[in-house]
Length: 155
Image (cartoon, rainbow, N blue to C red):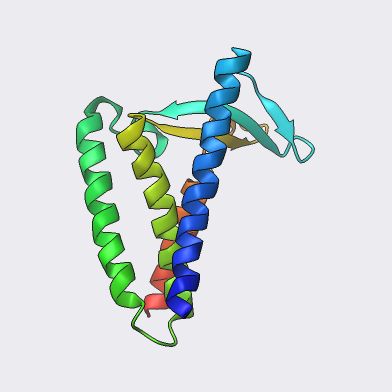
């Protein structure tokens, strides 16, 4: 029964982030406001649409097929590790980390395969311009937090 819980987390992240990405894309198409920025949480977060054609911070943008292959390979390996980990009892931190990591990986890999880019849509509303220009999505946060929890939970 516990395995179902972890799988539901993976599916929730994948479906939730994919839904948001689809709404961001649809809004931009309907409104024609591709570069529009909307402040939320008192300006602490900015909603904006960005097409990431590479990996993190657009690295590998000119080698998109390679980035896609690496993404599919890593997600596949992570899926096998996740499935094997479900048989281990008492590893909730590991299971949570792998669930977050896998949900985010599925969503971003799906984007890379379907759209040929990853839709990013949120950034920090800070004064330091280099950080303000970085645009993320929920999957990116899940991947970062999931990787940290996986390392802590594997110990």
